[in-house]
Image (cartoon, rainbow, N blue to C red):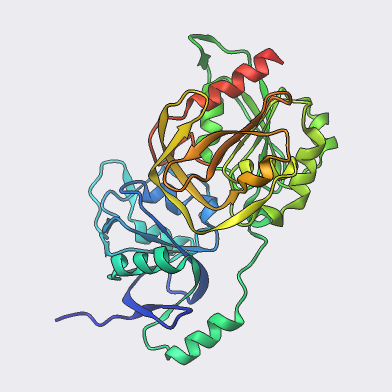
Length: 370
């Protein structure tokens, strides 16, 4: 007997996509986006940058290796929803402790499977990311469209996913940098929704880390006596966090600064550059990026909706260091005088390739020189 669909997605253009519920059974209005990664759904589910977003996976089979205790990127996932073609509720993997659906139910994350994800992803690609309603299959279309029209997407995502209080992270014991014991550089990390693998990448290089909330001011950061400052990834529009931009502006030139993803956009804004929203963003594990300093191509992991306007960079002391080869968007900038640099993609790569881990070593060198 064929199971009757019990869940659907309604888009602003009136199109409907039917499927079956898994995870939490909730009605939500979210921004719908897609991710082209073939693996890494656990890291995607637990990446704070996906807060309030319904993520459509282009790879058709999701859930087959379950959920491992060591692979979360945050303790409490805040993704809006997960939409897949085929969901496997019975994973096979010796590291798995729970199924994907069990974890989604625990954290009240709704999911839909059985959807024609190929058609849905083409719609997002052609018409852009936009609001979507996840609701019961029985919800009348007219009512669904009214809900979509009357619901505004929240703009306070960073404040909801950042840490509430300062905390400290010790370096890995015996961590080495450049083949020798590393000096324990003190990094102050501004948490805008930071992934755990970023902390691990700094720990492996012998850094001791003080993580501070997104709205920590420059005076407080200076009082912590850092050797360098890191600006994390995070969700939403970078212009929604002027407090972070102001703090970075006050710290420019005083310490080496390294930003990733949202941190890249915030660093650029602190220099006076501008950002804009992409049609459907970059989300996947195989985006080619050219390093303009070396000429080499890096395959990168990406997750962002906004980009830095290259024309606006001309009015700043920044120079462009990396370009996306798919659409020529800015993927990296630096100010050599201030020892500040950032990249739009994720060199910690969880999930994704390991081509760009050298950027953490660059940060260590800048602190050594300082």
